[in-house]
Length: 117
Length: 113
Image (cartoon, rainbow over all chains, first blue to last red; front, top):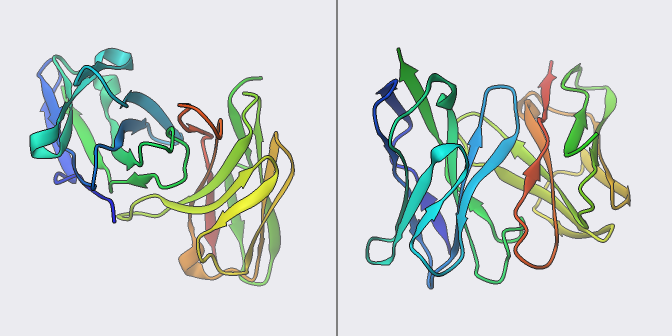
């Protein structure tokens, strides 16, 4: 069965500092990988996705993520965070046939990002 | 209006009440979903509708009853809920085929007293 682990429940970063949020997955083959963000009082918004090809993917709001097959990881990064990045971040994995729809999509428990002034 | 819209944003109901959550999508998608989001737990997929047919029901108690009258609208009918059903209920839509990801509404915060 597939699973997703986000090891950090909370992360605190100073505004302007760099950010890396960790995501590890367990899956028999290379899955489809996603990062979603949830701001307070809102639903989830897709930041970026990896299906195949270049292992470094660019997303919205200046985020990027790198797929490392050898480490079964898909960590999210941003070179310089802004106060508006404070939110909950969810990593998700799905089977290659899923196309990112909900079928077979598994979400991690999320990482709560706190930005210090 | 664009995107996925959920109403109401907040709902407080007693255990004997009957209420409904509504979701509407304006993205031309052909699949719609209900998720439950509880604190400290991963997102739980409750129901999946594709082309207005229910294709998945993940062992959800019968006190939750979904309805999808057309590809743009999705309802979740609630009756005789329990306090542990208090959570954020999220609606999402996507294209069933291809590489379309999920688009979420802002959710309904449900409190069962």
